[in-house]
Image (cartoon, rainbow, N blue to C red; front, side, top):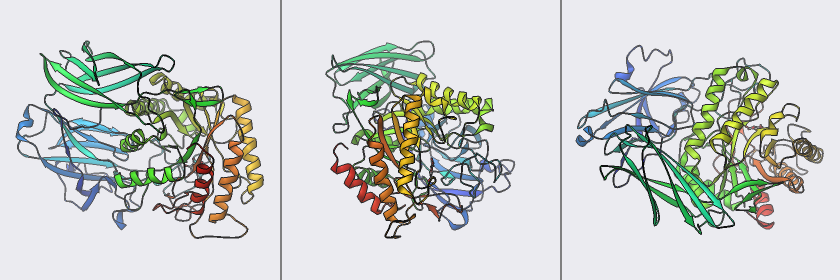
Length: 583
Ligand code: GCB
């Protein structure tokens, strides 16, 4: 699947706007044929989570129906037409004019449904989506199986999810139609760049998969170079283009290339796609991370897609603002904790030289999930789908296959190892990791990581209120992970909640002073170890969570508030990171 695009052969039509909406509290909408249309309860904006758009939907975690109409162009009879959803949270079933055209599981990756067979050209068409945002213990990420179950995440929250962020529902990313001149069209493009830093040459491999055709050929142009190949019997062609003295993608010079892919039939161009990519290397050498052969130290944050009213809904101004703030603090990177973000985040990072650790939605994994072959198959597919969607972004420098899996058995270790090896087999050009908590004993899978990522809240969850002891403890934890696994370490989360406007002297927990002090002490402690390759503060901004006695309205570990105002810690980090060099 490729993101919809308009060019001289392809057209897109946005279906974003207000959609009709109706809750299906008993889950009987399908039996009542709501896919043929339903009485709307209200209008809900797409893209956007439904929860904060209306008071009565704030705490609704169930099934809802969305519908939208559009008039199809009369010429679309002959064309290929599909509908593309950036994501639907969490599961979707899609009908066009009463015909089921597709289903999708999982709330953070895109999917598309082919509409060619049931679209009515020149007429109004009805698109209906059943959105299932139920709290389900067998989803990825999972809900808790019982409110007080042990080792299923550590926040006993309502709703009872295993993870520390709000389980929004809705259609949080754009919806659009993609129209191609014929049904034979480009379905998938994979760009692999092999760069030889010494000889300053790059070999770019472009693999194109075509839908509904094998009788075509593919032409690829990258600037002045071109290559052509016929499709094989599976509708796939791989082409190679050599680039001498390539302009490298780097933090300060985020140079991008475009592969112009054309599908040809009887010498006629029948489809075209412009695929952006970058040329750079990223590798672990000894105890350091090297970008284009030069050591890069990661300074940044774990984040969330979260903002008042929008929920997880995509907002382009918010992306612009977050990158502006990120750079203002001197950061050079972030992790898409704890799920793949909208593609627009990665595209912006590609253009502006920010590094991304791309994470799957696997947070809150625990033993009962490790035992299920069905879950394992879904988990492996999530890794593949994420790599498929994001591999062409030069900003993505590492794959994180899970956050804080609660491993208690060999099965759990094997599960995480399988995810790491799947990521590696899908893409050998980037380091892989998972983000570990707890001790080294349960984290044997770290041996299979290229970089060991560790979360630790010394002075907060451990030794609360005691920054000195907490920081010494953090140092010991990092030393222990390093001496056990012999790998470079990323301090992937550390920090403290600060309720904006709370101050104290001396600094105590929940004040802005305490948060700034703990972050400063722990950045210095981590950076003093030469095998630490980065520090990612938790979190970039405050974010909405389920209700819990450990969360005063939301998680306050942001260095910015939920609406992006700086706390003392933001100024403190800016001072440390901009006054001490490389950003
Ligand atoms: C963690 C989790 C993150 C939480 C954070 C916290 O270890 O990875 O999702 O939000 O701790 O604030 O407790």
